[in-house]
Every structure is written in structure tokens, then in C-alpha cells.
Length: 166
Image 1: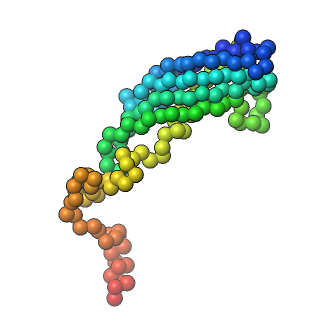
Image 2: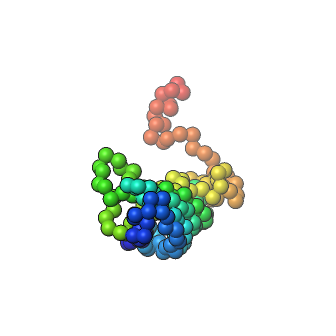
Image 3: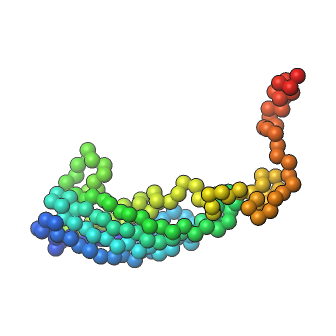
């Protein structure tokens, strides 16, 4: 898993830039299983020499296929992730936001992986008003209305309900 940006040409030139584009397969970033939900990723970037730091900016574009968390319908999620990361040769443990590297190449695979994973929504829905599945009969409540009667509460607390109703 390595995506390398060669910075040899801009090391001596402060404010020098390397621009480019990577076409990345999901396997190169070791994205979470299942692998077939991920589409190839395109990363347009600029890496700038800022003195002791090298600043990587760019945008990742792709899409991924998932299931709705409520109704299990297929959902295609477009990904457009803005990337802004800083790299340095000086190993400074006090600042966790600056990534350390050695040599003439910056390996950006791990930071791209993190950016992609963190950009995914915590709960994937086909629409904000998705009604989900009926917990009794399994009907998709977005498509049909079922005749199931909603339970009034937790059956384990039925004894307490009897006491309250007296």
C-alpha cells in the first residue's frame, strides 16, 4: 500500500509545488470489506513546500454502494473529500496532525484511507424520511402499509404495567 509523491524537485524551493493526479483502486487503500462496494478513486492534488512542512491539498472523488440502515435498499453514495494534510521530516510527537516522512518521497496512502473512511456517514439512509422495515412482518414501510399492531411496550415489563394500572 504505497502512493508516493516525489518531492525531490521542490526541496530547495520554498513555495515550490508538485501537482498531479492518482487513479487509485480500492485495494491500494485497503478500504474496509466488502471490497465490491468501492469504486475506483481519483485524487487531484498539490503538494507545496512550506519550509519545514510539506502541505498536501486536493480532492478525492469516487462513489460507494451500501444498503440503507433502515430498509436495506441499495444506496449509491457519492464521495467528494477535501484533503488537507501536513508532512514533515522532523519527528515531533507533540503535534499529532503532522505526519512524519523520510527521504524524497511522501507516502500518502494511509492519510487518503483515513480521509475516505472518515467522510462516510455514520448512518447510511436512502432518504432522510426513510420509514424502514416493519419489525413484525418485515414489510418495507416506504412501499406498503402493513396491518401489524404496534406493541405497547417491552414484554419484560408487563408485570410492572399491571401494577401501575391497578
